[in-house]
Length: 280
Image (cartoon, rainbow, N blue to C red; front, top):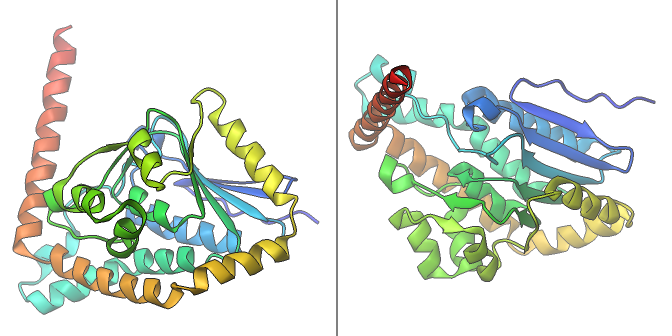
């Protein structure tokens, strides 16, 4: 019987006959940026992979040069609709509902979840890597969480998982100081399991996933549950707190001003590039 694979706009989903599913960021022209629709579709994709009996192992990867450039930065539309700070926090929290649900689903994902980082990863694309069971990367990938620059805060359970995985000093450099890390640096910390050659990277990861899909699915699920249960409740609680704090930050004047400046600077840079290109 044919398996019903959802058709999405911002993701491509694949299911191989070997039992390997792929969730692929598919906005290469936008560096796989995460729009509101992308968050909703990522949530739908991860739920599909979790519930699909034929999907034994799931890979998350990107189409094009980037893994994902993180959240697509535009001014939140509802901000101009109210001057009440409590209302703005509620609006921001409502807008983050899919994000919270997605992180919860990744925390509770019952099967083997592999991240195949095919290029630069930014923001939410980095924090969610720590929720995957195994992370593979190409040598040239970079990793950055520019939350302080934009007036955001830690999310994706990174406030708990980053210090645990890479140590407090490196975690704070990434979360608090906007430092960009190389794949080699994060492999040394254990954040990345292995760096694989860029040539044939996808096929290499697919083979590793295919080999794992030959194992007993029930044994994989039982062992993953044992590993995750040790801190499942802590992660779910941390996610709830981080989302609340993120909503407060996004409703703040400080964050709104920083977003405005970022968007304006980005538009100026685009215009300058267009002018330079027109002179050639």
